[in-house]
Length: 164
Length: 164
Image (tube, rainbow over all chains, first blue to last red; front, side, top):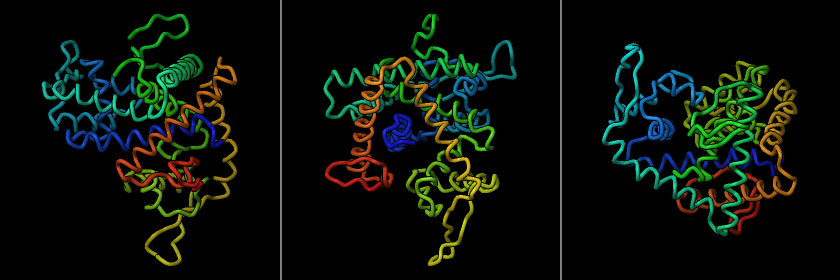
């Protein structure tokens, strides 16, 4: 892969984000492997474990492990679903809602770090181009690969309304 | 996190890349969890398992599992290090080198997918802005967090020569 490939930078950015996250989430006893699930629940509280694994394209056992840790840390509770007692709906505890603003702040700071020494215009341009790339990725995964994508990914894609 | 945050798009892009990779690597019996290690070895063949885990900021047991799978699939061999027989150097098999061009092609195609409907100028601009973001991330992780970063990350950072 060329040094100048966006794929290379995207991979590096992801890895550095994971390093940043693990450090920043230490005080909250949240591992970087659990952060994704917690952030997902802030948006989609009430989903079942299997629905979550499916939407995040993560295997069920990995999702189960992460959610168990979040439960032990006191952030998530599982409630049997009314019409299907075998599956559990996932809800956030008051403790999880209490730290939400701080987690959002951690994410906002990473965004600021990435934009260091950029003008406001450059930063907006970068965000717009990343949005376009994400839409292209979604189109490919959904249309070519026929794989279910995130609900409410916050983007309009090919003639569909925003489901977010 | 705002819908328009680059962090949100970067996270989505990473997840969709993982989905794409798992599908594309199926014929080679390489899981998405192993791809990173294999791609790293194409660049840094001869490192030890611990060095690799350290540079990729992945815990040793996860790295060990991924490398064991790559070994079983016939892509990686472990050779005891001459001056330290307790640690193994990692080398690629001819089979791994044989598929390298095809793996690079898989990455190049993803890059093309991301750039769908972009002009050449927009794509170059996006790549440049991602490079700048990656440099900012590296600066933060290395200087603020004092954490070791990738060798040969292919970028000049704050007065240093490119180590790649």
